[in-house]
Length: 150
Image (tube, rainbow, N blue to C red; front, side, top):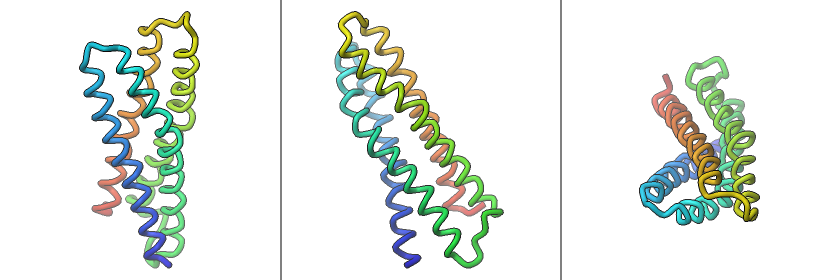
């Protein structure tokens, strides 16, 4: 049973962190171009998947992580690597759920509104992208703590 829980925990981390890094690279490459329309189009396509996939992967990572601590002998919540992993993962989920997701939804509404300028839409997209930077940073630090068990 523990092996399956560990597998699901690692799989959800791979999806969450790996997907986040991929999206960071994709958005950075599109942002370097001069076409604002392409930036908005790519964000809308990626944003829909992100809202579904990353929120679920983040919550799954935390749930399976808690489950592993409960069933693994010798693992305690007081261990620094467990505490840091849970804390940083939770902050990353909160950023996704309560900061990035509402702004991504706002971009969708703004794109449908003909009175909104590309500059205004891009400003909100940049906020979401910056939240993604924070998420990747937090997850990377948590990942390092989990792997090396500081």
